[in-house]
Length: 193
Image (tube, rainbow, N blue to C red; front, side):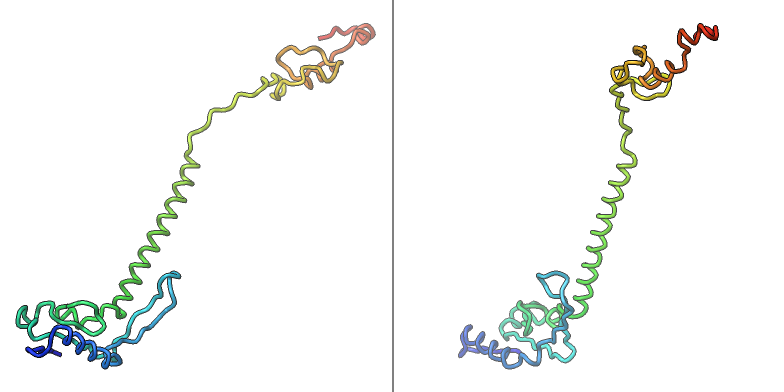
């Protein structure tokens, strides 16, 4: 629709007339919303179906005369800005826009999953390739016979010979039990080792 305000209508009267036509034709240009729930609690997901809608465009004669019909002089009911005729006839919130948005959400989700997977892999790789730690020296030196730590030092069992500094208490006790005593030497004449 091309409005010609002429000399009788002012700018406000022209806006009022456009708004009145907009309200009376709302059922014809409004699309039907097709909702799919939501990806988050903040926004619902869906698109507008314009299969039965009729695009209604407004302009003023003086706008066309000043800029020409190919400039951004058209106002489509339901859009909120002046547009070119091709932009005004397009449906920016239709199923194409939903598919683009859905593809963008899918790509973002895949990127997030890949990032988390890479972080987990990097953490696992780091733990496998962590530098070897220096072995902690034992608190007690090891026994030359059994390899166990030298502790106790004969304090627990008075029958164990005094420590020689190289064997543990248990190994000294075993060695002491295996050596012949003086009575054994006298009876059997075997010298001790």
